[in-house]
Length: 205
Picture 1: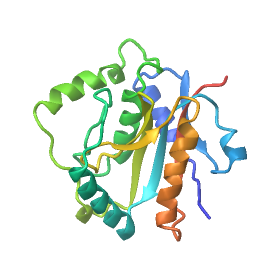
Picture 2 (picture 1 turned 90 degrees about the horizontal axis):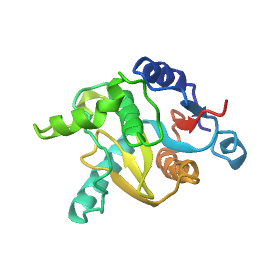
Picture 3 (picture 1 turned 135 degrees about the vertical axis):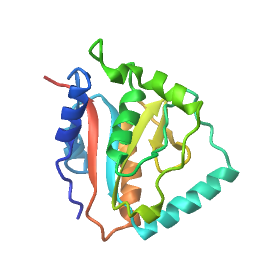
Picture 4 (picture 1 turned 90 degrees about the vertical axis):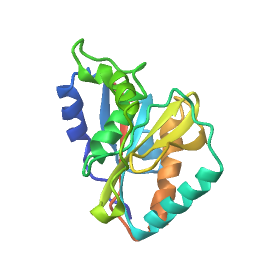
């Protein structure tokens, strides 16, 4: 059994304080079956997954990175990706990944710092970035984002060195496609219940 907790309220408050207009909202996904997924407002432009960092996951992560280093992916230049350079910031990094890759959809107040994410990132990227926090820092739970860029489903994890491409997706199927990847995370640690899925959806009201 998977425990889907209520986490989205924190994201809503955070982005509202930073000037993102409430035309799109973060909302909790309460289950993975079609009936519960149909309750999520559409369209969905990003999906966030909170999951436990376990030994099984860390082993998989290492194997995946080694494999992809030898088989480079075709990652679009339009993908915004940043590494996590400080501890306990995965929620913020996940939120930034969700917002920065959907600026064509989202609306911001004129003075919102979120409008300048790409400019700020491109400037800092030229100066180089430090490595993400190591597993030795005892990260217990971790946020990642799934987004659609150019019809491809990307997993954006600040603890990884690059985006992960999961194949084709669309604005209509992003939620279901991301959920299929989330199911793989859950199957990897079937004894775990600490999973939460949040969708960034068009406000239906």
